[in-house]
Image (cartoon, rainbow, N blue to C red; front, side, top):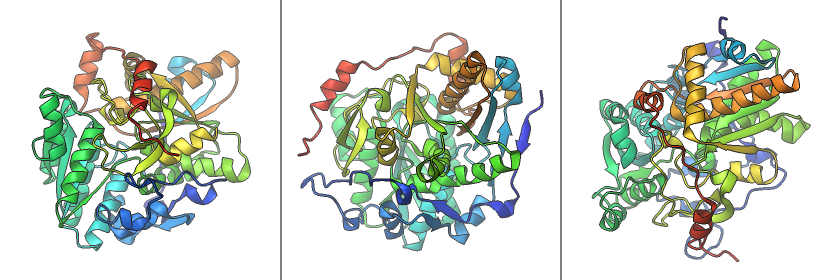
Length: 452
């Protein structure tokens, strides 16, 4: 069967991002100062972020205008296509109609430039000369290097060591775009040196890499910090995905019964979900929203809803999130972009209120789904995206078993052309299915700050 692709004209690139904070029935718990445990104001974030991003972080304005300069760069790959997965539907013999929004058409091959371009632009507007960041699998680091190149800013990336070794071509991309990249933990920061002193062979984690990047930015006047997921302004920028998808679903004459996204920090899931979630919050639509995470990093499905640090060293503000504990050390699964100990506070708030569901899968069922998708749809998915595909396939199988028609929409957040070692390992039967034990979560909770 032939794929059915739906493209918007270039003139239909959204002019505004959507801020779900404006439509929440109750505001999410505020971030707290790590020392005083009082709610923090914008001034506490000023050493790390440009003021315009801080304003977006705390904004309750429903629509935020996308600057003309950002939209000009977006035109390289936006609007991205919406595709009906007719080949996949036939292969699993489902009455469901499956659509996916394909973000792998961006220069770095993932959804990450939707926010990296915006963040680089706002930093450039405030005269920032250098940006420090972390990256898990390398999609974010390469996307930020690309965006910094577009706006003439120097970039420094701390890449989780296991991914630095597993995915050499991701770091090549960063260097091609002028970025500097080191494996984390590194000897470039106090946080990195402290970890290496305890464990010279540490594989690293996103929490450690965040600590290094935050320290780097805090120690230099010419440098700001940039984050690729979790924070409100990052999720805001990603809503360009869902805003386009709303229009494309209208073109098709369909509307999703379930929206699926892989979830690590939460940015690509939120980017697709939030514009559709608005209909649920405002108009009472019955659409379901499913966040799919790795069984080895199950923050939503096994974590506790607690205030925790966003990094290992405890340098960030405290945020209320579903967390496995900031000391969490993930197994070296191939979906490096999902190896985070917590989840975006906005997504967690909606999950706690029952607006979002969550499911966790181990590696092998996800790669099985990704391989079937590649064989029927022609696109090799990123390991992170394979989780969304697994969730969508299981929803489609349930529709077949129920004999029900169901419209499923998921975000194919990136391609896997630089992740083929992961597929080699899967095809050779070398992938291990890790399930993170609940006793380790209970253990980690003892290290969390006690909030009255």
